[in-house]
Image 1 (cartoon, rainbow, N blue to C red):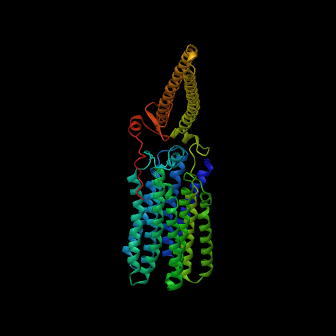
Image 2 (image 1 turned 90 degrees about the vertical axis):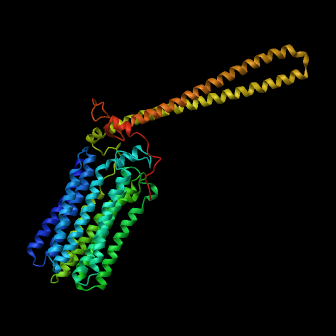
Image 3 (image 1 turned 90 degrees about the horizontal axis):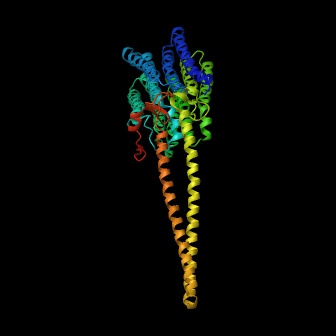
Length: 496
């Protein structure tokens, strides 16, 4: 992985975070009626910052760093601050501006919490590539998340989205227009949260190597459906609702584009799981297409709403969500590299013991090829010995038949019978020797399997560290490696 690519992927969401903050503050300070879009733009900065944390956690692993918990912590802090801000606005400002902006800020904070969960899940991102290289599907990786942790992580965004949907339905059932507008916006944002629940589940299942092929495209289809629901509902809102719903309708369409951008992440990681699909390469451009479409829509709204605040608010909202789509490109474009490939840096090779695993795999492959050759040779020897025994038996039967037909040649036949019996004993001894050698080869194969299991145990990071072994390429203490060496493949954690 080139250092420049890592810097660019991290700089993109960070620059969009600054853009959201500056743009939102300018809108709040310059425009008298800019409280609603300005607050929403500032709150969107928490989403782009959480995306930055996702990229940073993943890319730092490819660069060979292990202290990764700082970024999920920062993402959760920013998301919690924005969520608290939205709640404070709702409780302290009963006017229409406070109600609408409170719902929108609260929804942005909920989305940021879900993205922060993706960042937390990604602390074992490098295990996805190692599982594809060294483990069969269903053989759980003990270094990554456990089966219970997978469901706990998935439950976080699911509960968040459920809370958002419940509050959105309550607001939409209210008689006031501003509550209904805020409820529509919060509903669309909750659908984005639900999309991130699928992303978290996909990543966590691939990290512990229990993402089965029969689930391959199910979760990505869920995300696309969420986006289509937002877009369809936004269009229906624009066609059937009065003027105050203009900002809400266009915002719902833009949130649908965000869902489609997030679906690119799902298509990316699913399409490269054990069987690379062409869609995995195309999916990286989903956020760019969505961001460009959103920017085009916002420019049209700006030109349309020169003197109408509703269209200007919608333009600000769509512009901010377009920046979120562009930031999502950095998250989608994170490479799913093979640990044995050339894209991972030298520090990561030393840190995770990847070179040692590769060398041991090469030795095991050469040993296996030699054993296959020996087995084929011994089987050929056994076949020849059995053929010689069958020929000797046929000759003995022929001589016995000749003796019965002509008793006068009894001394000569007796001599021939002794020679035949001697040949039979030699053939039998050869066959037994071949069988013994085959048993020895089977024992050697079992020893080779034991060597292979020892080769994949964790080792220490340095050449002088004898206290650790390599498990799936990650250094852990030797006692822990012996304790965790039990194969858990027979207990598949998939409860779908």
